[in-house]
Image 1 (cartoon, rainbow, N blue to C red):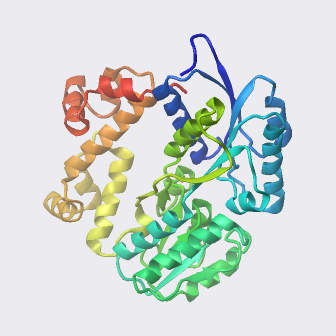
Image 2 (image 1 turned 30 degrees about the horizontal axis):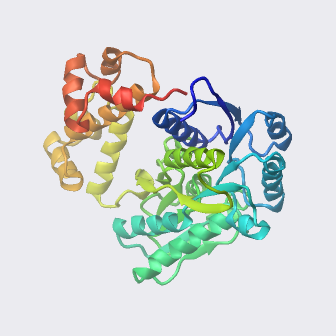
Length: 403
């Protein structure tokens, strides 16, 4: 902990235009709150703008957290820019924690003076394989990388193939081009996959290109192809049709660990020159990987309605009417596949929204209760306590973000 009155100036360079950048920043703020550190943050929103980066590196800077920009594709030019940012820090003896820097570049250049945290490509690939294996039998499997020659993209595809091989699946067909530059070729390639097919894309941008190619070429998702991306970015996942299932790396935990690592470097408790893996990926399932059985499609549609409108005046009767089925059948199918009632699912979604508002907004608890679909604060309070094991006030005290 810093001495009273002392302030530590830290440069934070993250791709704030992307979901992962914001979540990593939230993780940094979580560490500062939990450790009671008093850091003055200087925010650089474009990590590959070296000149801007240099201007922030004044004499009072004690440390740097620097991530790659969302457009980073592993090219030689981008690697040179990242290395130049590291060189600026090394010339001033300023410790740096790098996020999502290319591991091959680290090994080749023997980068020193920093700690480097990366998303675990092995776990990403294995989670993708297990997601498709649990969903059912497919006639074929495909992989679409973001860029040719991109190390992290290639690794995710390789570990995806390995995960399938462990379960007796023989091979994965790989699209050789760019999903953005070679859209027509990718559409033809998708047609060649024996159906039903499962397609894993190395990130959500590539997965979105796959969905667009399916629409242009008359391929149905998920009936003909199931599609899975990585990053769980709402820009691509929530506002597509069908909505996109995606692997969500634990970016917030990565940011928290980055701040912890930098704290150790600045205090001398730990040394630099290390590579580490951060984040435990989970899957957010949406319509693009929905089970193709009628019951599975029904339940996934119910989940989408609940995700979008749980905090409105909605219940099982309204959902059943909208889907033109009986409430009894709706509740039966939903409980069979989800092991909870539609009402329980609505309540859980409302509590998730309440948790977000408690952590990120300044609204009163009474106001939050109304925003989450409850007329009284006391009713939501009982529900919240039952699910979370603490009151809403206690949750806010422990989780309030100061950003």
